[in-house]
Image (cartoon, rainbow, N blue to C red; front, side, top):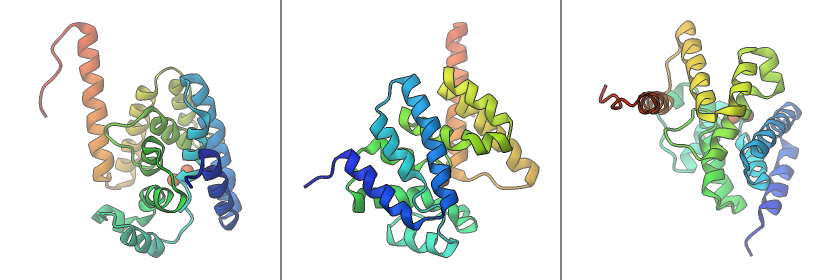
Length: 210
Ligand SMILES: [Fe+2]
Ligand SMILES: [Fe+2]
């Protein structure tokens, strides 16, 4: 028998009994933000709750476990993932939620998979989970610019994502970190779409190439 979304959520919550307390509290804070945005954008609360509880199911696993689980799940592992295996926790969770918890909601699964790096084209629920994950209370207290991104998300999710990507880009350059290719591809698309939208508003032809 196929489990209902609420049963899937309960099963994931039960799994969190073996996870660190700090991670559980983070997920609870993400859920608060995600449900706030779900209300604003008229999204289904159960689907958002499912994605919020699922997103960090493997966040606390050690790097060698991330590599092992990703390999077992048949995920492609980039050099950037090997350098920082925690980046695999979303994709691992998405595969596990489908295979072990019976989640068939593709949009919720993509929210889980892409919550760390983003993706070129994301359903609303994925945008909400990514942003909620970045500006939950503890993170915005630590990184005040997240308060601005949170405010922006209330009126424009795409603009908030773009601003988060800009902040991330500056962070990575300042620290001499490489941008993950998957994130860079997403960011490039977001920037191009933003410019195309601006051009349309101005009645110009959208920019081509490069
Ligand atoms: Fe995460
Ligand atoms: Fe998270």
